Length: 320
Image 1 (cartoon, helix red, strand yellow):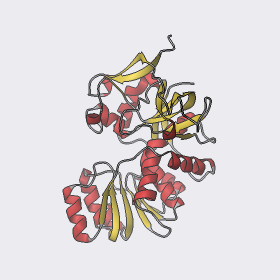
Image 2: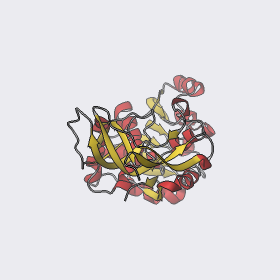
Image 3: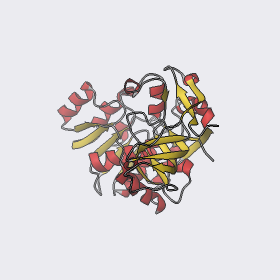
Image 4: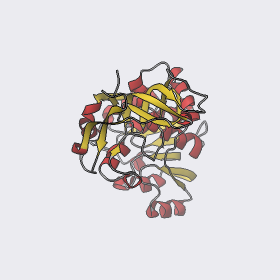
């Protein structure tokens, strides 16, 4: 095949998983300060299938679209001015977010400083599962909440991609961690550092916990989860509303209770990725990949992801 084209999965109209089509498209070329990365694996996140369906970040995209923001691969070429990376470097990143990054493809280009060196102790599949989920958890806990030793952190949807990393980061920061998830995930979450687990299908969390300093809400308005979280949060504590931001109702209820709220959207962050890689390589953090799929199986991967029953992450393998 021509060196000027590449395999990719494209979306030409918003809709169900069936709109994901494998085809050959033009290969991108790096501009000055950018790198061309040969993608070995691409992580899959809820924002991917929401965008594919015309929700999420769809309003910021132009069709046809190559989905995906999580990348792990090898630098193939560097543009003028790049001094921090060289061809052959193994890297991982969440480039461009929320603008399109085109990770479901054999190659991506992005500013070199969106990338960090891949954790040396894991392969590309595991590394591709990290960037968006890990940066969401890290930026929420470290930058937004400033979690300190001895605080109590409640992580909702703790068995998911962001959640299982948030549990580990909160524990690394010295917090006491309360995690909500279905009972079959409890033993695993305790291995990751959860001090207490709550099966939200059997108990309402507000009936069995309290005195929380920071809530990482990864569920949102479903079952009024974010608003209910206010009742378990200390006055002056913080509820970080990740999926949909702070609703008018949440702001009102939190204000009446003296609880702070914050919306959240993850950003590219090479220094944080470097710190996260260090934790992975030291054995302090591990990433869970439930299943990997070939690039051409992206539709099947989306169908599984949309069940919201996966443990950790799903990943597309692009290049052997």
